[in-house]
Picture (tube, rainbow, N blue to C red):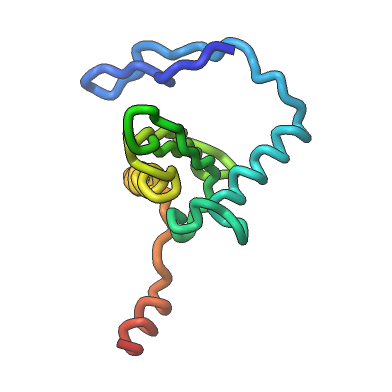
Amino acid sequence: YLPHFLKAVVNGNDTIVGRIETIGRLPFSKSTLAILKEAAVGVLYGERGTARGSRIEGIKFGGKTGTAQNPHGDEHALFCAYAPADDPVIAIAVLVEQGGHGSETAAPIASKVIRRYLDKLDMLPKPDTVEILLQAEAE
């Protein structure tokens, strides 16, 4: 398996001028991948998920928090995520040097990037008009 950062190369006219070839597949069975995906979604949506505070309303995504020891100071914060969980279009890894715990600093950053990206793709759910009116009446 060869990881890469690009899916395609486009010119100034948004014409695709090159595609990146996927080489290989990850050596996991479908059942193992299902377990990993369930665990990743549980990090955000599980009862004891460490990144519950970084959820995006209306979009389910998966991730993994982490904390790396630093012999020279505060711990480094890590968070890797992908969204949406059922058909990902974005994957992200955030490292905050001396940021403490991944759930406190790195996960909120990743959540904001994912939200912005999905918004640009018009993939965020639109609020229901009736719900907006009811909220306005309540205020």
